[in-house]
Image (cartoon, rainbow, N blue to C red; front, side):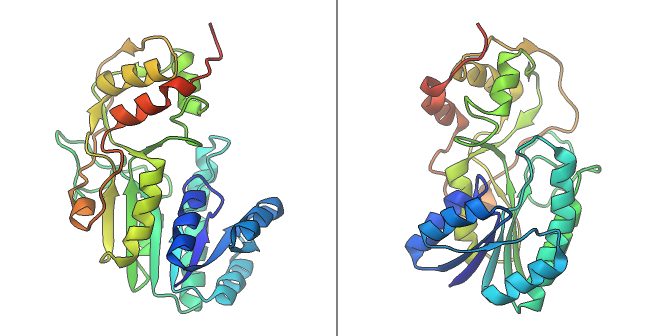
Amino acid sequence: MRVLVAGATGVVGRRIVPLLLRRGDRVTGLTRSAARAAVLRAAGVDPIVVDVVDAKALTDAVRAAEPEVVLHQLTDLAGQDRAANARLRTIGTRNLVDAARAAGTRRIVAQSIAFGYQDGPDPATEDVPLRAGLAGVPELESAVAELPEWVVLRYGLFYGPGTWYFPEGAMAERARAGELVADESVASFVHIDDAAAAAVAAFDWPSGPVNVCDDEPAAARTWVPVFCDAVQAPPPRAATRSPGARGADNHRARSRGWLPAVPSWRAGFRAFAGAATPTSP
């Protein structure tokens, strides 16, 4: 297939690309960096340097690629700038969907989040409404659904190499600074490699949102101490429940054939425990 990956050099995108190439797909990768374009080319990808905020340039790029499927893995979180990421979700997604439509592309698979559901006692299924105030997420999902065939991957919290939840990541730094709180708020995680596998598997899924997370939603009082230990941080302080936090149910993804290779964050955290490099005594 002809596949266009928007965000091909991002933390998920750079794991998706080898999976596509092994399938024999012809892959076009979008990036804003000429240096990263060279890396993509060396890997066997047709790179296009373009800023997705530039609607005309993006439309020209997608038309040139003529993709059968667009994979939307655009994020802007390297500097932990949530406003920039929201802008990319809103403007970047709008431009990407319009460009895909102009190119005659019918199917899009897009990255969203599984930690934006309204509060409740149980892990959320995809039918639970999203809570108000999610920067750019409703706009992203609404735009994606305009194409004839679409899948929104509502990912759990990413962990593993290159993510915030890794010994060199932003959350490990916060843990070592004593900033993480062990309360009753519930989260769902997904290993970054499982996230990439789901994106490729979704080529054959029916349209709709799908939670992509592991099998064990967990309260922060359970997972935060394990994470702190894995990244050589001091034990966290306990607190009361944070509002608006619940895990996600992954049964829909499992029913469509996706099974997490790392079914629990427990095993995932243990796997990188030895890689921790503490920055404070």
